[in-house]
Each structure stands twice: as C-alpha cells, then as structure tokens.
Image 1 (tube, one colour):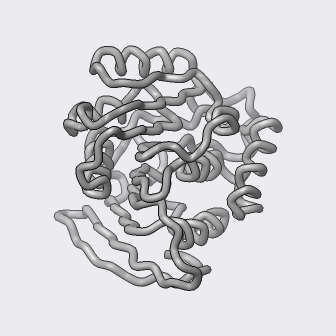
Image 2 (image 1 turned 180 degrees about the vertical axis):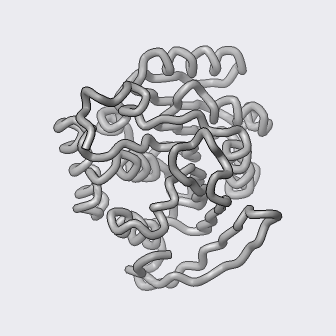
Length: 254
C-alpha cells in the first residue's frame, strides 16, 4: 500500500480530464431530462480545469443558466475554471474549496449536477474528510460506505443538493454497478431518483482514464416505498445496444 506522501497531488485529488465525448453525452442526457427548463442553477462539485463548463457552452445551454457553482480543491485548477467561466461568459463562480466542507453551508437549491467525482481510496483521505464523509453518509442513510472511496460521498452530497425534479449526469467508475461498497449508494438511488439511464463503454475506450467508467443520469425525485425501478442501459460498443430492466428495492448488483 502506498502512503499519502508517495502519491502526487493530482492523484490525491483523484482527477482526470474528462474527455469531451463523455462530457457531451452527459450534456445530451441532461438536456433531455431538463425538458427546456431555464433559469438553471448548476453544480459542478469537482470542476478541474472546467471540462463541464466548456461542455455547457458547446451544448448551447448558456442562455438557460442563472448560476454555475464550480467547486475545485486545487487552487490552480480553480483559477482555470474561473477563467473558463469568464471566457465563455457563463454566469456563476469557481470556488477554491474542499467540496465536503463546502457542502456543509449549502442546501438543495440546484437544478442540475454535472460531475466527474474524484476517485481517491480511503487511505489517502484525511481524518477530517473521513468524518465529513461519515456525516454525509449518515444523513442520507448510506452508513458504512462513505470512506471506501471519495467518489461516493462527493456523488451523494452533490445529488442531495438538487431540488426535487432536478437532473444529474455524472461520470462514475464502473465499480458503481457491482462494488460492495457502492451497494448502499445503489439502494439510495432506487429510493430517491427516477428516470435512471446508464451509458456503458468498451474497456480501454478512454486510455487517459485510469479506471473504467460509465455515465449515470437521472432525476432527483422520491420514489414510493417498494416501487420497482426501470433502468435504461445503452452499451456503446460498436454502435449502441440499448435495453431496460427492472430493479427491485434493496437489489444487489445492477
């Protein structure tokens, strides 16, 4: 096991530059979920250098935005995101902050979450952030999973900041589908989101990305207790193969 001192700042941040093809697909899913809504408040909880901000402009959503909140833990990257907002004339701000700390002062007042949450294993997370992650997990009823990897609490806190009916489209590691540590996350989604869509990609599709990824999209909306969810899958492996299946509450893997 490598120690914190042996790992680069970029690795500790858990970041990689989101490929435009993934960002653009996230934006396409988001536009469909938003259905022409305007006056949007957008949250990007791990902004990096602003890949999703540039995606918003490419997607033609600038005119529909009221505010973009781009949170980034690395000061240099936050400055890049800030410049991107200005260059693209997008309303909002880039905040240099630890998103786990930022979340303590912000409620559910966003309409859209776009994210590529940081992928950092528990041994590289500070004790303070582990406690913050536990608090987020306990608040949302997903206790026991929060500190296995940083993407989990960041993903959960971002979705918890959505208004009822708000949309999200995020890049997640494929371990989301089957990992034991993500089981409570999947169960939480079944009770608190609707219109779930998962985009899958052939392994090795994105060589610069250190782990295999998928895109998860949906809407923040409480689901009646015991209701079976229908999840749409799209496998982009030599064309696009699509299917749906039903997932019962407290299901294991998806």
